[in-house]
Length: 192
Image (cartoon, rainbow, N blue to C red; front, top):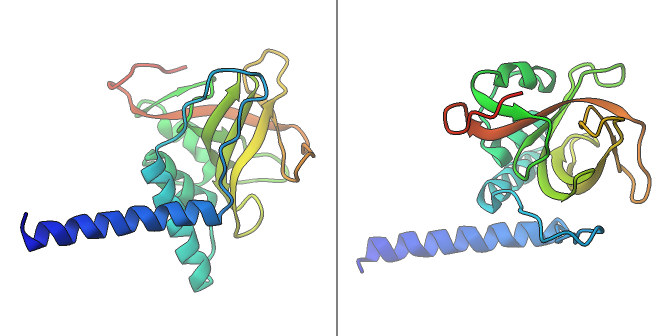
């Protein structure tokens, strides 16, 4: 092994340790399913660590933290525009649907208290009616990890959700457009 290879390996190990330290410092803990379901799949830990590091860097510089750059990095879904445009922007490029999946971008519909919409990344599927999300700027300039969201739609289609913004307290029902999956059309033809 050359000195360059050893240095690169050490740099990767240091980055991994720093990412794990950031996750621990954020209080990011594994949440078990309350329904006794099998252990859920989680989103890509490398992308999540990179997104968290980007937020921490912006916060350290006093820069504004937004939901779109966080979701783009954490999910790998490379779309541009305000959060409310992501559902339409994904059409024909990324797979979309109404079923939650770890790593998918949850697209909140624009409405009266959020003109530009909001997006978050599903960090864990707890049950068919509950997920945990990671997102930025739900609370101004802050990062929220493993925040519970429940589907309150009449048809179990995730068209209306409630987010637990304060521990133990679900917020008002909000409209949701659906999930954008981190798969380009052609990799998986799922589109609804």
